[in-house]
Image 1: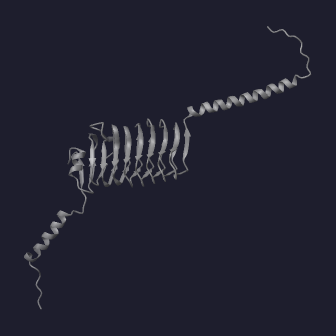
Image 2: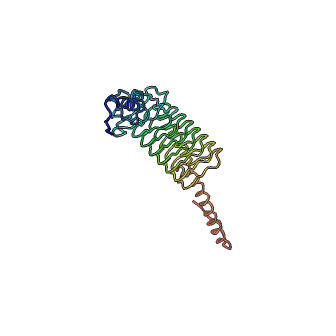
Image 3: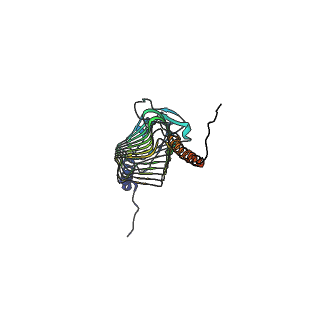
Length: 289
């Protein structure tokens, strides 16, 4: 029996089915470049599809960005040259809202009365290699879970890294230093890992746990804060391998009191020894000029 190859008209319906599937269900991610392809980051976010990457070129971007889908945002070059600041300083600079998945890396968030990055009611987001300055919170995790905050610098904010009602997240290898209030805060946040962070030179506490349960706080450094690590109304936490030291101006008064008492005791013993050595000696009136 002779077999004939299919004609074009016979395979045409199959071609249409394949093209429709590719258009309706794309399986590949694309890059959207700011400002060459989108003038603003928010415009790029609106243009992008789930899983796309937004590449941000050097510049200062005055925006309040809201993301509701899984996207990756990163700087094209150096974070010191890619600065995001709040257009409305009563709002956060970048907010993930109800999002599953996402990455933010290599950006400098600067200048808001809210948060540099605010992650709200979201999960599975990575915040890595960014810088946060001059804001109320550098990073704020709010009613979220499975968030990774890693290798960021948060400095000269009111608070460095703030978790509220957040669980099963990892705060690893960050520097939360020289903030006006606290370095790292966990408030009503459970089952998180706070590890290998530097929380030095903050005005009040290096690391604070308030009404938080079952967290692991290990191998962190908290030097020259008013208090190193503070736990309030918190239980079931594992605190191990951390290095802490309070500011010297709290230590010096205690040291001075200690040395004053020690000096008094030494002086008293010397006086008693001298007084006993005089026993049996005759004392005549003396003239003192």
